[in-house]
Length: 66
Image (cartoon, rainbow, N blue to C red; front, side, top):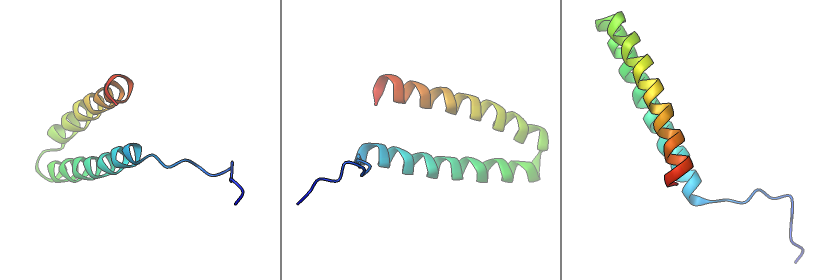
């Protein structure tokens, strides 16, 4: 059986990370939308700070831990 060199390799750990990030992003989006109904200023602060810290945490996780 010939080997297909064009196939994309599947790595379960990166798949799990992607699924985890998708659920975390969905939860974060629901939180920000809920906060928009309560206090738009608070929602803006949470979105800005949470987005920045989340991005930094992801970079550190992928670069040094994962």
